[in-house]
Image 1 (cartoon, rainbow, N blue to C red):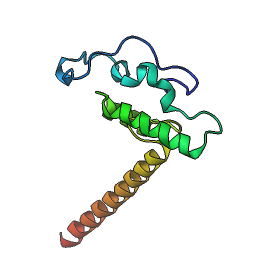
Image 2 (cartoon, rainbow, N blue to C red):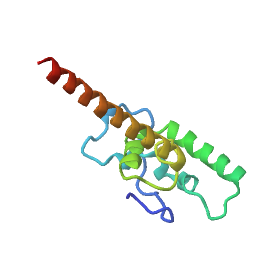
Image 3 (spheres, one colour):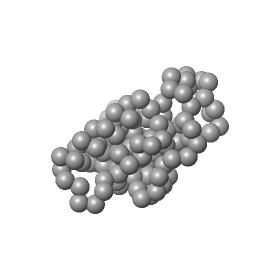
Image 4 (cartoon, rainbow, N blue to C red):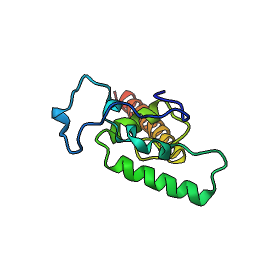
Length: 126
């Protein structure tokens, strides 16, 4: 995990927006270029007992930050692979990530079934 929710994601300055991927340092970890490493870090994790309207507003603001981030896809994949249980990562809330993961599991099961079915048909024909 990158940082627990109670720690700030602030560190070194983020490179200017609009830097093409090919010009960024490919050896540096993806999160060194995350826009959320600036002062918006508090947007990404819910305070305790946050009212629903405030949570939705905060999550919307966090997603707007993610939308301009050059490493949004890498961040999202990190959160899906970990899986990160809290916060907005890669433009997705924890609930949205659970939906994505469920769809991926369902797709993987369907692909396995299709592969077994095809293999069975080939064996029967041979």
